[in-house]
Image 1 (cartoon, one colour):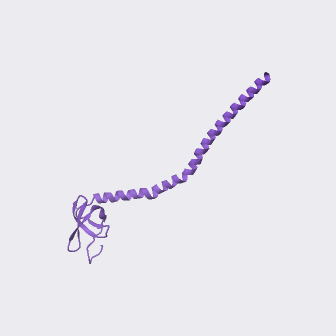
Image 2: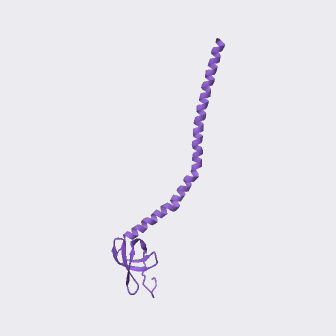
Image 3: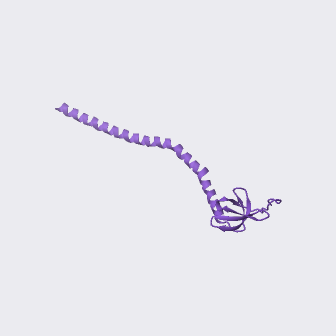
Length: 131
């Protein structure tokens, strides 16, 4: 009976040690798995951060400046269209602009989004060039 009791105690202790070892291995396994996935995803996260600061952020800034420039157009501004036509704004109506082009002051209607930029330089037509 004494031997049986000792064997039962030894088996219980071995079972408890095995359970504790299994739990420790599971915890260690979970921690190692998290580190493994973090190391695997780190390059992708870094690429996204680089893309954001090198491509996305500057493009948003440029779009914001272009939108502000289009909102601030006023009659009398010298503009250049995306087609390369230089003209002077004579009328603004919603999203349609009327510009004068050439010595004969030919009027053209263009869409507001077709304006590339507002010219700070004096631009005259035909024989004269940018000053």
